[in-house]
Structure formats: C-alpha cells, structure tokens
Image (cartoon, rainbow, N blue to C red; front, side, top):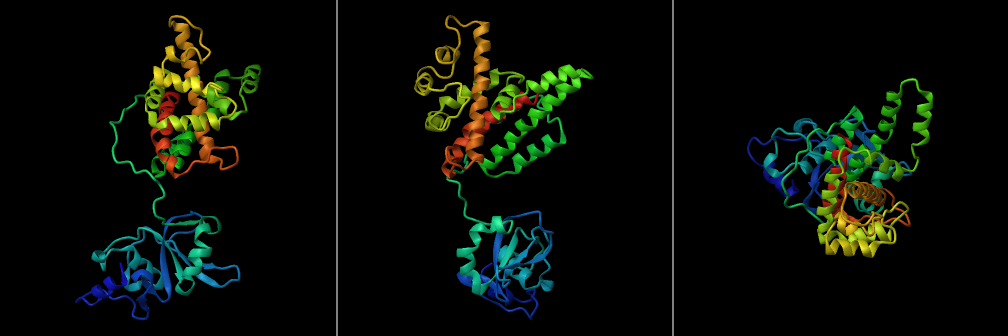
Length: 363
C-alpha cells in the first residue's frame, strides 16, 4: 500500500486506527515509513532464525542499521502492531485489504530511513552471506514458460527411503531451473550408496563378497553415475528421450559448447563433435547413424549391436547429466558458467533427460 492510499483509507468512517503513538510518514516512492523504518520484503530467510521475532541488525561498529522481522505467515493484528510490524503490514497489503483479516506474505527487513541508500548500495547485495536472508528481486530469468505438452505418467517409480521422498519434494518446490536440477540430481546421488548397501545386504555374512563389491565401487562420481545407470530398468525410454531432445535444433549450440568445448574426461564422444552433430542433422539419434562413431560393430542391426547402443546411450546420458550438474554447481575456471539465458536449455533439455533417467533408475 502506498502512503497516499493509506491516507485515503484512514479517513474513511470506521477505518481501523493503528497505535497513535507511531509516526507514519511518506517515504521514497510514496511508500509508508513508520517511526523512521523503511520496509524491504524478503524472498527467503534462513531457518537459523526463530519465527515471529524482531532481530536487531547492526553494522560493524555496533550502530543500528535496522531490524529483521520474521513475520511471514503471521496473522494481522493492526491495533497492536509495533513500528516494524506496521511498516511491514502497510508494505504487504494492497489498499483493498486494509483493516481486513489476513497473514503476512513475506518476512521483512526494516531499515533506518536515513541509512536506506547506504544499505542498498553497500549491504543489500551480500545479505544472503552476512545475514542469511535474500531480498525480493525482479525476476532474473530470461525465459518464462508459457505452454506445456501433455504429461506422461510412468508406472512403478518408487522413492525407497524418507530421504528420497524429501529430496523429490524439494525438487518440486524449487522455482528456478538450476536449483531444481540439482535437487533431482541428488536423487541419483542417493542411489549410489543405496545400491552398494543393497548388494551387501544380499550377501549376508560373505565377507569376501563384500570386499569385492567395495573394491569394484568406483570413487569417481561420473563412473559411479554410469554404474548406476547401466543397471537401470530399461534403456529404450532414455534412447527415445535423447532422440527427441536432440531433434530440436535449438539445443545444438548448447550441446556443442557444454559437452564438447567445455568437455571433460569421460565423454563417450571425445574428439567426435562434428561427426556427432552431422549424424544428428542427417538421420537423428539412431543406431544406424551413431554406429560409426559410437564404437559399435558395423553391419546390419542385431541384438548385440542394439545392446551396445543401449550401453552407449546410458553412458552418454550419464556424461551429459554430470556435465550440466558440474556447470551449475561449480562456478570456476574451466567450467561452463550457467547464466540466466541458459535456463531454457536446463528446463527443456537437461531436466527432461534427468527425469527420464530417474524413472528408470527408481524402478
């Protein structure tokens, strides 16, 4: 609510009145400032802080910068509001809701009005690090999903542990493509060790067998990912998924850049970038098109060749998923640095591939 709107509302008959000892004045951009406190809404706040509290925010010299108000979800209580709560309330609601029942939609940081410009220029950008809270920012994504194809339901997908269930739930709650991908990837990581545990449990007291399992379990993350995927339920859906994804020419530049130009050890198509892209352009992702560059015996397709193609595809999918994960998680020299303009690629290429793999690994 703007200050001018508040002035209109409070003049109406029977309008609720805040504590008369609080000074409400017009702030920057016609905002409402209460007792010198300017409200800044927060996108998220660390669970390190208790709920329903006002926590002082001090600068390095111990002087007051403002206060953190963890009020999101609290019910409105206009007549009893302190200065911080009232400033947050007036910022939280539209004019039409003044005096009505409701709850806060955000936590707030209340900044001393006289230090607002200083806070915005010197402190706001680092609040997630020094304060454990993130300010509401204009959307940084360069892509907004406006349409969607039908959803394909897959039978028999099982989340075997409470940790799997929690990770899956967090992936759904994530609004951003990069974070959502990492949460889904976490489900693959959980499968690494669970696979070892299940194999050991099946052995009973066979200590020799346990040693063989542990010695055969690679410590390299990409190799462990390949081991998990090579035991997946069915490789055909993964082949079909990659075929559909690579048929979309929008993603060719990303394929070239992320998987080849910024490629790492473990690429099944190392030094075969042009041959692969040419095969996609000519015949698409098929056994016949990939035979010459995938190390598959030539000749007419046979069950042996089909099995080799399935193995190749699972290893390729593992490499692609791992490279996207590394590009998101590792902001360092030598990695492709994901930016906002890469969100469509993650949303419509990498994430569908990862979801397809998960439906086969978790069956």
